[in-house]
Amino acid sequence: KTLDDLLAAAAAFAESYLQANRRLPVAFFLAGPDGALFYYTHDHKTEAKLAKFQQNTRLLTMAHATAAAVMAFPGGYQEDSPDGDLAAPVPEECFLLMGQDRQGHKAKAVTIIRSDNGKFFSLGETADLIVDPEGPTGMQILPDPDPDAEARHWAKGELQAEGIQTIPLVWEK
Figure (cartoon, rainbow, N blue to C red):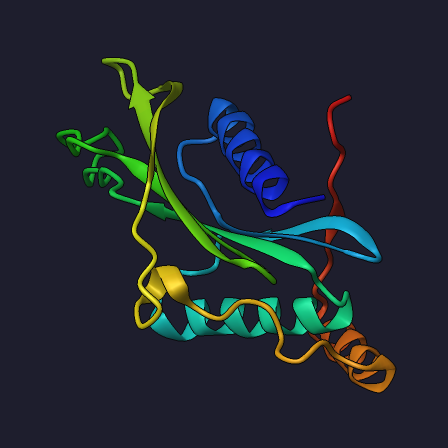
């Protein structure tokens, strides 16, 4: 599968997830010789936990000799009020998709449309973002160089020790 396939799969995951949940997790989609997989977590609210997620994604790319990968991050969310109701909506609630393959990087922002009661309605426009090699849209996701068998084995052991599990991606036909 290609980087564009993974970007589409990440957007489809977000749409499906939002139909049943109010908030998106951070998610990681990858494709390599082991097939297409994804991993996600809701545990990303602090810098340390987000750094742990990013560390796990680096291990995943090594363990699965990843050829293409996409990170999906929620962004521009409206906050809950103390009584559990939605606060005033943010004008552009969205999520960000940042991907990389061996040919380069791609980044997109996808708007989220909610009905007046705050429930998910649909995905809105998708905008290509300028990839800044020094900024977050140009972050190095894939291992450089490709990991050898020993590095892949080590990374799989680290993931197992951390209890990290991936989910196979099912592609629509």
